Length: 249
Image (cartoon, rainbow, N blue to C red; front, side, top):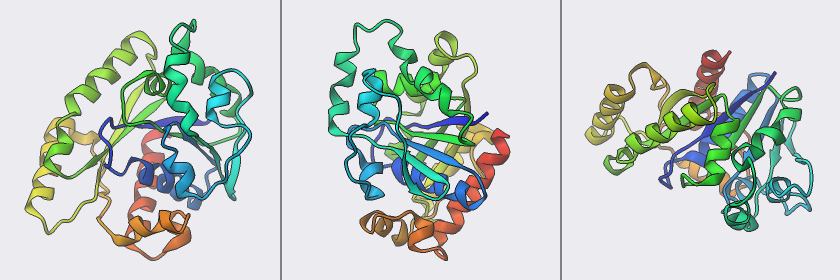
């Protein structure tokens, strides 16, 4: 049965969508079958892979109008696309019974078809994020190695603990990944040390180095392996994908 992983950080610009795409692509390189879920109304994951608008998105599935319909992005990796319409979902579902369990029910039939289902959560802690956490086995927290990026860590941990207590007792923190890392910068090194003090062994050994190829790949509507297979970004995400597989197996 496939594992479900949410990538969560309520701060924007920390490399969450980049990590979702390239962890998934790295797992494909390692022989896994992966489904990516774009749960962000900004649809950055969908745009980054150049997927055209489809008749059925995650929005229609959440509203109960359709089953989930994955789009084949590349061999071994499918995507459930998002749309700006998703921004109204939280208001529309506010009176829905069992609203926190909608995604769990939608994903259940897909778990046998994929080794991993990876969710790109929106940069908020609202109903969509609660749905993702309720459906997930693990949370991976991407964290930019800058001072301000650390400020919401306690809140993220608190939300995960509440979900584990009330909605999903199986939920675990799969790990924290340092993104946009430059080992030459004292601040970046200091932030990583602070993260390690806070999360201990949950911090992944692989840091995602700050490289221009990771910024260029979405403009070419490709993952890092399709865009620049020999870049440090591809090396880092392959190593990170391997770490995640080892931790969640």
